[in-house]
Length: 205
Image (cartoon, rainbow, N blue to C red; front, side, top):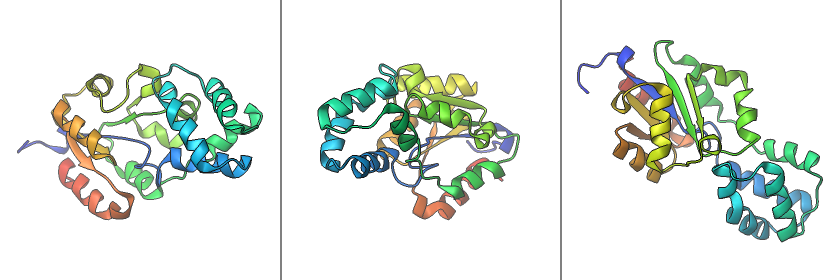
């Protein structure tokens, strides 16, 4: 990679655990338990049994919610569940600041294992206008760490993988990104300043 210029280096991000503090799934299942009075353990058993259906776009969010209610005894109209679910997002503000500060010549991508309705919500977020490519697992039918997911990211960014750093909070996904040819950067929100320095070094800023 020696000799690359900033114009030749770019970056792509995961969403959950990178642009959020903690996991969306953990917070959403806790919120469901708090609202319904059903134990969080029972909610999570059902949630994680079926969430793959959302991640690969097999189910829509209403079908997912109907299944969870049937299995757990939770009872809440869908029109009340959806805002509860979306309200479980807790932004990692420093990462959004980093995103905004990236030079315009740096192409920016997103590859997220995500869900119907949530992905639409994120697309409408004005801050996401900075992304040049948004790839959501529920829209492509593949989730990280499969090679197909990373191939979709590379195609969407229209760049060689070797010119793109991929930022994720899960080591398994970093390993898969590296295997595909990306430059994996492991992230934790408690070490944001350290990450930002590493990213600046990668981009040669």
